[in-house]
Amino acid sequence: MEWDLLEEWLEENKVGPWQAMAPMAAHTSWKIGGPARLMVWPESEEAIAAMVQYCGSRGFPVRILGAGSNLLVADEGVEALVAHTGMLRQLVWGGKASDCDGAAAGAGEGSGDSAVASVGAGLPLTQLAEAAARRGLAGLEFAAGIPGTFGGALIMNAGAYDGQIADVVASVRVIDERGRTRTIAKGDLAFGYRSSGLRGAGLTILGGDIHLGKGDPAQSLALMQTYLASRREKQPLDLPSGGSVFRNPAGDGAGRYIDRAGLKGLRIGDAQISEKHANFIVNLGAATARDVGQLMTIARDTVLEKYGVTLESEIVYWD
Image (cartoon, rainbow, N blue to C red):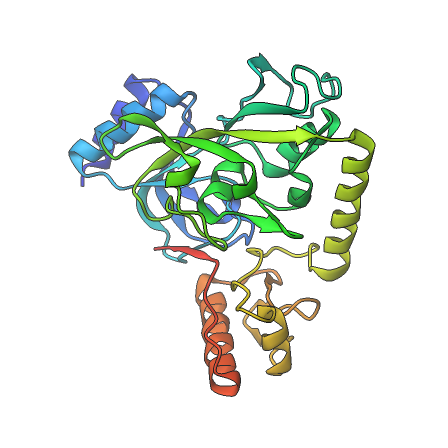
């Protein structure tokens, strides 16, 4: 594959900054992963559409990267163009642009008992939640402390504390493999527990619209602080990880099964099943994807053997 031709095309069409052999360990929350053949930071939705169309017509594989959470990249890296959504961070409330931190917005401004916002795929979910709360809008408090971007949250239907992104989504804007832009209504997104029809559909998410109800800023922010404190108490946030490794099976948490199986603290290389929360695998310094993969296999096999429960991965693997 003639990657130099793609490099020339990216440069000539001013798609955005790009880098050859970009170390994925620098772009994932696990701090693990070999190099991507090319990485680009597209500066607009139009640039992404043109890029997807060009790569699709010439057979260049494309991977879309948000915050790099819930992602494990092979030690050998990925032979693909990785497009980072970090520049797609727009947030528009009721047709008016708003700063990401929401500091300039008045409570409930622009709507009566609810508001619609247009959100870019690359906006960090925690920033979106805080902006909504400061604006006096409720429905995203559960997202406090969830790592990742709005686009990633849509793909996996991110959630916590009895809330999920599916509760607030109205529609999603995507680009298909031919570079065509279209909008998908919520009813066609097939949201499920930590899943959606967007996963593996060959679509590039540009962003979407959300619908939030009226709330009280002080109450929403206080609730978010409670959730953040709970996360700090229960999760190993002081070490690099990919977030929750397995989905919770019906009836109990994945971490409790792994803990009862006697695996908490198990270590291979610099990867360790967290001593604080067994559904996290942490990087103690120089963990490899192979180390993490072996621990995941041991956890899955042991829980199945002891309890007859099959743990399903929440982690996306790139090789």
